[in-house]
Each structure stands twice: as C-alpha cells, then as structure tokens.
Image (cartoon, rainbow over all chains, first blue to last red; front, side, top):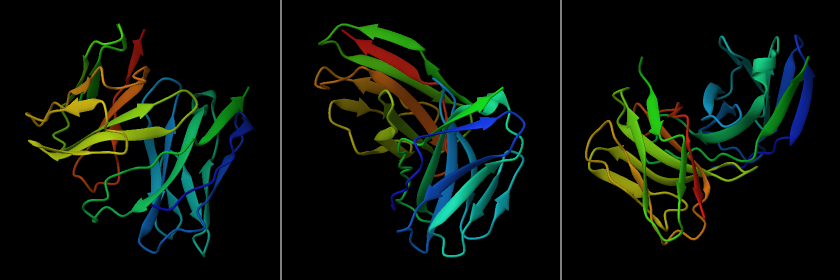
Length: 114
Length: 113
C-alpha cells in the first residue's frame, strides 16, 4: 500500500469548512483513497472513499487531484463533535481479495474551536 | 441495533498472566480484525479472519493468539509472551475480506503491571 503524508494537527473555527489535506504521491492506479476518523478513546469511523472522481456523502466531501497524488477531505460546516484524529489511507479496491489491511498512520488531529 | 461490542472497556492484569479480550458482532460480517493502538500512534493489525475457522497473522502477531469458532465472535488472547501488552485494543469487522468499510468496536484498554 502507498504511504500517505498528513499534517500533524489543524484547527478550524466552528461553523467553517475544515479542509484536511493528504499527500499520496506514490499511489497506484488501482488504489483508492479512504478517510476514517477517530474520536478520542473510541474506535475509528469510516467517512468516505474515492478512486479518482470527487465524492460527497452526508458527512463530507472528498476532492482528489487529477494526477491522484493528493486529496482533500472537506467537512463543510464543522461542529465541536468533529474534533478527532483523521486518517487518510490508500488501499487497493474492494474487489482485491487478500488486501484487507487498512494501514493507519498517525493522522491529523483536527480541533474545532468554538 | 447491529454493531460490534468489546468487553470490558478497561482491563487490568498482572505481568505474566494471559488475558482474553472479547469481540462480538451481530452484523453478519464474514471478516473480523484485531488492531493495537499505542498512545499517539496509528493502528497496527494483529490478526484478521476472513471467514469462520480461518485467520491470518497481521503485522504484529507475536505474543497474541486468536480463534474464530463462530461467525459472531473473534476473541484475542494476549499471552505472557507479549513484551509490551499495555495498549488500546480495537476489534473491527467488514462484510467481506475485501470490503472497503470496516466497522470498529469501542475498544478495550489493557493495562499490565
């Protein structure tokens, strides 16, 4: 699996959009970008994933650059409950049996400021 | 409600004792996983199971053992051979081994003194 690079920490004002960057310059053509978050002392929670097109769901949007070497997770209207560690992970897609591992790095600690 | 349960939330043991952490899921998922998390670190995969009666070692399996006798249950035993057992242990499951989304339990914080 390709490695990812994320900033160690970020702050965002409550109600503003939180933009979390991730670099994955060695990503392969069949690898997806996944985002999870972990609120303190809880298990991680899946947020969103994508291959090359931008994706949006009820939690967030994922913007992937055209060369796929970086991506940005956007939380459109951050709340205090969004304070967590956010993990950007690249992994081969769902159909590849035998590649079950999600490699969690240290992530970005996002703090929402009231 | 469907989900993953881990018990207990906090566990204390003396050094040299084996301890078993419970993980149960009622999501009807085939695949289950155990991760370890140390303070300020990411998650590291200990063992995973793609199907009942089958499991594979992850990145840090030494000092741990698992069983998968039932689809719903994937207990982890931390043996006395594990040199640094104090950590936060997370269990997860997914619909199948290749599924993109893993569902995590609340975790068990193990302290060995």
